[in-house]
Length: 399
Ligand code: PLP
Image (cartoon, rainbow, N blue to C red; front, side, top):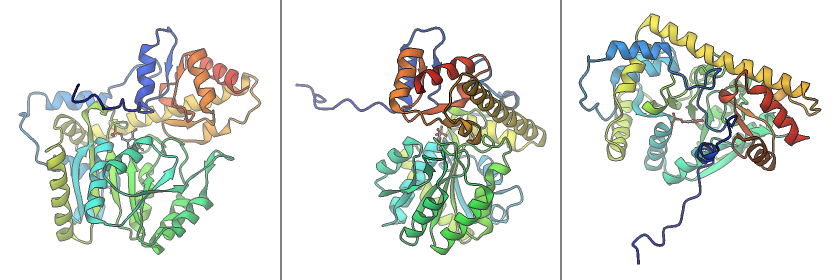
């Protein structure tokens, strides 16, 4: 009798499970469009030149001591300026509680735990659909979750009316998890005008906006523009909270670099909130990683390197936008009579194709093309040389 004889096998993660199946496939032209990691036009992972330069500058110049529980102060300050604006008065006056955390996931997890401890009875409202891990994170933190409308199947665009209605109908003071830009998995973002409206409605209801920003720069190619939702809310007087990730936009995936921040009434309140975030982090992982934080702060703290980074983020976003155009063109030229405009309307790393789970299964079994069963295509894995084969296969399974 084994001690662990009754432990059931856990279900596979819908995203990471795809990579496992992909790795087991020996086909020469297999395509992994599951995981959201950027690839160049040859399908290869990318290390940005600004990251390589930052690595050179830091090599040999730092010891390997622990960072404090709240991480690198310099990195956190740079990170806040990137999100809230270089000249943000809130960053300057110290009224934002913030700690370096374990990329976007870890930042969300700290926030969820903070919510459980200090916002009793406050439910978190999550978009339908969302990044699947949001549900896991708030479940494991023991917070009550609910959902709100976001995506309209019939238009493959935003369900603005449904979203506003659900925000209005939630109990006053509820927490809403908003994707700051490049919504995952739909690639559908509100316009600036719509964000202003959403901000107004949420203000009237005294709701709390928690922004998850995993793709700053990846949506439009412009890091400033991609922060517009946060800046609109702040301008309207919201005290928002925010998770930032440098996985995608700096290509620091495995370095696990991010920040969680909570806007407070003043510096004194921020100190108290930050002290609690530190207590939570201390028990979970003690302190965050140093190397990636040094890379990010070196880039963000040097005008020339930062300018180079902006160019390189734009290069990645532009390549994805180009692949959207090519995919739509190839689908239309393949003879498909289905509407494919959403492929180019949607933004960021993902295309929410509208394909069914069965069609996705056929792509995998008949064409060795892998993606999540909700029909989400990671556009980062599409290249000039595989887009034709992808379009032909998509036409084949959607006929
Ligand atoms: N939030 C969203 C919406 C995401 O899509 C992702 C990554 O896929 C993350 C957070 C977190 O990513 P990471 O923990 O790698 O920064």
